[in-house]
Amino acid sequence: GADVDIMPGGGDVKELGEQSIETLRRSFVFKSAKKIVLLLHQMEKPTIAMINGVCVGAGFDLALACDIRTASDNAKFMCGFVKIGLFPGFGAAWLYPRTMGVGKALELLFTGDVLEAKEAKEIGMVNKLSTAEELENVTMTLARKLADGPPIAIRLMKSQVYKGLGSDLATALDEAAFCESITLASKDHLEGITAFREKRLPSFKGD
Image 1 (tube, rainbow, N blue to C red):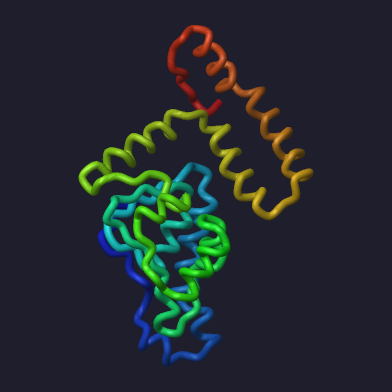
Image 2 (image 1 turned 135 degrees about the vertical axis):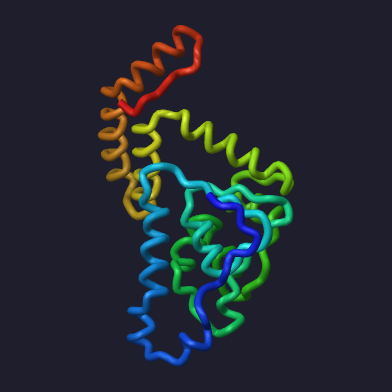
């Protein structure tokens, strides 16, 4: 994650507007955005976006491409593309409904209105909300908790949650059986059971 005061909306609007549609579609800006968003989304390890301040445009998209979001109570979120006659080209139309629901996603996309931190937490887009002073501590505490978890199980959980968004329940159940079988045969599972019996914290190694 990253502590960001202002997350920029994108490239030079005037310069981009003077190019052809095909040139724009193949531009470095969109290629780079695609690479970054997919990297965050497909990374095997959990990702956390830490937002302190204003999160706008492409920066908003990058925050939503992460698995979890923490924010300070003064954070503000805005799509904003509609205000200058633009479609959000960095994945907002895919990311927004999956993190806040279709209705709220369309409202923010259509209006470009600001989403305050409190409401972002209420609708589940932000996972943890704190003061600006406590934000880093809250985020790092969560990050350490995830880092101490079983790597294999967490990796499979992440991949299956996202894969499940585009699959049917029967397929998801088949995948779940396969994934749990992998973890049942892992040394991490044995360590978890042993630690539980010995009344201590487990030490997972990813084996």
